[in-house]
Image 1 (spheres, helix red, strand yellow):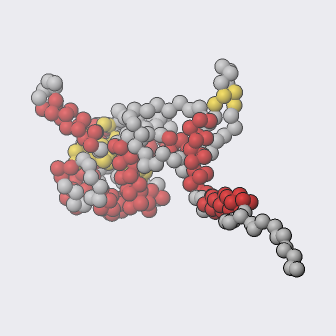
Image 2: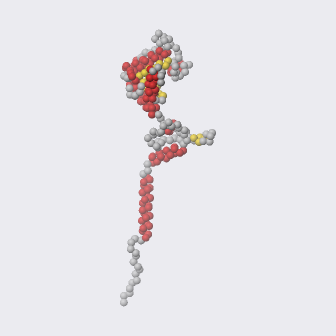
Image 3: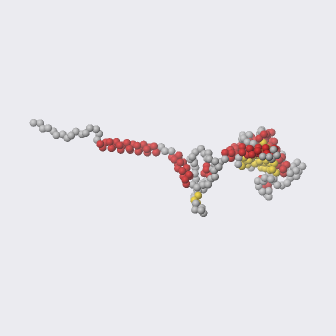
Length: 280
């Protein structure tokens, strides 16, 4: 007689329960490593810039007057160099930023920026004359001032333009033809009185020098005469003291001023008032 075998019950259909838990764990680990991979592709430079910008926004005390809304191209400050914070007498901690950082924080007048750009262009064109100490170029508000020293221009007590000075004026005229704006030419002297047949006073000498420069720039240098006006100030606007030889030499000068739109408008209004007899 054949004995019947008692076999255990067959296993249930489908995957075991532990495999579902294992699959969930593998899915979570895959997501975790994908996130790690995405973090590894982070733009580190941009992250540091954002962190520096937040630090500048919340960690620095600074007093900066603002006359208009900021006109920057990016909300992220590119550079920031904090100095050592120092306590003040009113128990307030301040930080002083470097000049480079202040430049990013300042809101510049567009007219002033335009004058600075013009000055840089003129400095590049006239760098030889600047290096020789014959001229210097500065900005005042929206005006560019080309200051011609007497040693590089006129002989003493004379309004005659020699060959070397004429060559320098030609370079100045060429540079001025590259920029826009009305041109004001002003003559200045020191306070030593002059009384000759040709120049009975410092007024006449300063006017003659300004006129000589204007004539050369327009008739030889090709500058449109309608752009040019002249002024004679004599010894009334000194740059330096008239008590020393060096100071008097600094005061004897001719200034070529390139006006910005704001200064030009003011000049035109003043000229109109003068023609109308001073009436508003």
